[in-house]
Amino acid sequence: MQYKRTLTGLAFAAAAVVTLAGCSATSSASTSSGDASWKTATSAEGAGGMDALVKAAKAEGQLNVIALPPSWANYGKIIDGFTKKYGIKINSANPNGSSADEVAAVKSQKGQSTAPDVLDLGNAVLQQNLGLLTDYKVANWSDIPTDLKEKDGAWTRDYTGLMSIGYDSSKITDAPEDLNDLLGAEYKGKVSIAGDPTQANQAASAVYLAALENGGSADDISKGVDYFGELKQAGNFQNVLPTQATVASGETPVVIQWSYNNLAWGAAAGASGNENWKTVVPEGQALSSYYSQAINKDAPHPAAARLWQEYIASPDAQNLYLQAGAFPSTLAALQESGKVDEDALQAAGGAPKDSVELTDAQVTAAAKVLAAEWSSTMGS
Image (cartoon, rainbow, N blue to C red):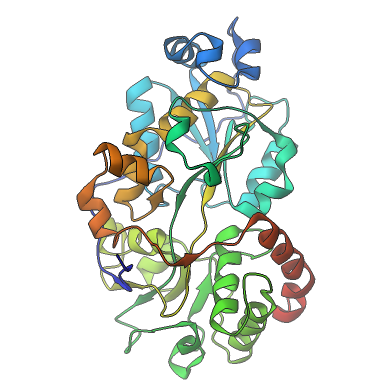
């Protein structure tokens, strides 16, 4: 099935998402007697089974997550679902942070009860920080394709989307078909991306897509940097971090970001969204990029961290990703077992089959280009 180029809705009802308590500097780390074994456990089965894991996680009583906005890939409902199922409080820190912010928190808060237990990382930052992670294989390890997991469990891909253009149809007369349309006069001061491409995977992926559209390739993304230089020179680049609030207010009328985020900020968000917000996957080669789940090797709540990984990989959470228009890593297994949310899959346009995703080596090379060229090109 070819992916729908214009996306108009989500499979889930527009219900309020729940943002749970922020991370408190006074929270205490676990003192469970089984703490040491769960810090090193590479599977639930190898450390006493799922019942033992649940018991230990409940004893810890908390889980620290970071950089998970409630509207991003349905994380509001995913967090809420975990808490309802296990009664474990989730401390959600810096929800609008980047992958680089996640890593910085792990390093700066090492040994503290506030340190992130789990991470949700873009691939460039992931590959640069493998030493911070610990191995763990979820119970349904076989449901995750081999190319979407590290062989020993240091990380597993969890969801992906397609790079898209979101735009306010009350401010933009003609729907853009590709990134080059955004160089036109109608887009003066209106185009933003989600952060600094040297720090945030979503922003970097906007540059990758620009490279693919302008004669570059996954092996050389420099033409993507050149494109954004042209966008700035034309006066069209807006150096503002877009959020659901800035889209709802009209401050950021055009945003290049993942399809599931653009979808979530439109009418599906109800009163907090923008009913005029439309989502278009640009013509030409589509770009995807999986994010990865991982456990901080120094997690202050090691059992809860592992239970979170189990929940994230479960059909319940994987279908919640899908309901937000994000494609889960276990999609093929869900389809084969009949556990996939078919309505959500259809609303998301079907599984993408013709998209490009940069390899680990290409991401590493792209990061070097961005580090060398982005600041000088954009003047920041």
